[in-house]
Structure formats: structure tokens, C-alpha cells
Length: 296
Image (cartoon, rainbow, N blue to C red; front, side, top):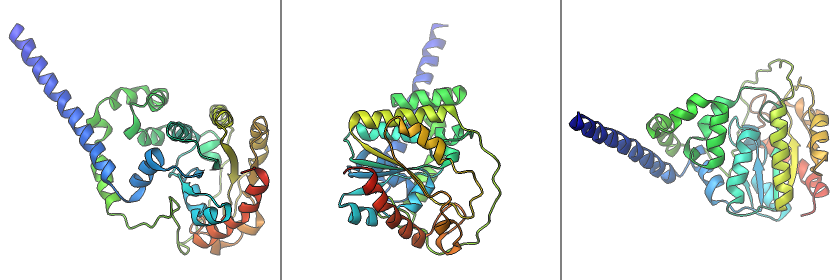
């Protein structure tokens, strides 16, 4: 019996060693990727020290031309926009950044579904937490989102089971970025969908308040922006957002239903994302509003 337990212990140690080794290997591969979202995520988490940061979903990374922001504001800029991510992810991202330095300004593009309204984004949020799982904030977030997944995520083999494929795909990516800004050229076939009514999410409201409180404490200027949506049939959430942000003195710049943008299909790549022409026009449009809203 003693020999059996010794063998079992050795076998377990080998399995754990393989699992840990696989996780270290995946982290090594991730750090070496020089293109695609893998690279942009790494820069946002560990490298950028830009004065101005852009937060938000894919709409943020497509709508804010960092070249125009840099030239107009006279400050360095990096676009941290991440596909399908909202306040749950960006509160964590802010912590990562503040552990390294304090930016001067954050422009947060609000996507109602991800930042204000009830939606089940737990699964995709957990996916983005994979590389950072053992960070205290990410660790608690995954546990809160899905306890069963939290248990499984302790295994690097499970956590990174498809990571190598994603990293290799990103390493071959030819997408052009300008300090995180990812322009879309031209217009594909735009399909306008009707949107069902959405319900405000108290949990997301609390996270937004926590983010505003941290920015206030650290002296980071914060501006919320609602960028345009083609043929927008969604209720404008700006009033609810203003009530929330007014407690912390955070300005809200609202172009969500701006008639100058939402009816012109030539400014869009698809219904949710402006193309490079639309992004340039929109970025120039908000510069004066940002300057009027915050003292830089």
C-alpha cells in the first residue's frame, strides 16, 4: 500500500509539472506575439505609458483615431479597446495600468450592452481573464462569474487548451494598428437589426462607480463618450449615465443618436462600427468637447 501511494504521488507530481510547464510555455508564446489582439492586449496590460487611454469594446478600438487625438491634444495616446469587453474587464484593466503608472486622461466609450444594461457577458469576460487568472482581481472575478469554471481554470491545460492556435493566428495577423486604433476601410453590407429593450444592470452601475471613484482618487481625468450607431433604434442611455457620473464630476459626451452620423452609411463599416472615414470625422468632432469638459 505504501508503494502504491508513493507511485500515486509521483504520478500526480508529473501531471502537475506538465500542467505548470504548459502554462509557462503558453505565457512565453504570448509574450512573443508581435501582432493582432494578443499583442495589443499585452501592450495595454504591461507596456503602455501613454498620457491618454481609450477604453471600451470593439467600438472603441474602431472609433477613436489615436493619431488625431495625439496631434490635437498634444499628448501620447493608446487605444485599449477590446472586442466585446465592458466595465467588468476595464475595471480590471485600470488596476493593471495603475499598478505601473497614472495616465492623465481616460476616454471611455460606453457600449450600453457591455457597460450599462443586463447582458450575460460572463463567459467572454472569463475568456479574457485567462492570461491573468492568478491576479487577485481576475481570480475573484472569475470565481464570481462562474464557480465551476474558476475551479477548472486552476489547470493551465484547461485554461490554455486553445491558446496556441489563437496566438499563432495573431502572429500571422496583417491588421494595421496605430497605437491600438484599428481602422476599418470601406463599407461592407450593412444589416440593420431591431434591438429589444434593455434593462439597466445595477451590478454594472456599481462597477462604473468604483471605476470613477478610483480615477478620482488617483487624479485621472475621465470622460464617458457614447459614439454613434448606424440607424440607431436603441433608447439613448445618456440621461441614466449622467445621473450616475454627476456624483463624481465625470462628463458625458453623447453622440449615440447624433443625426449627423447615424444616417450616413458611408461612415460605417457595419451598423455597429464606423469605418476609417467615420472614425476620423468623429474623433475630430469630440476633441473640442473633451477640451471643454476636462482641464488637461
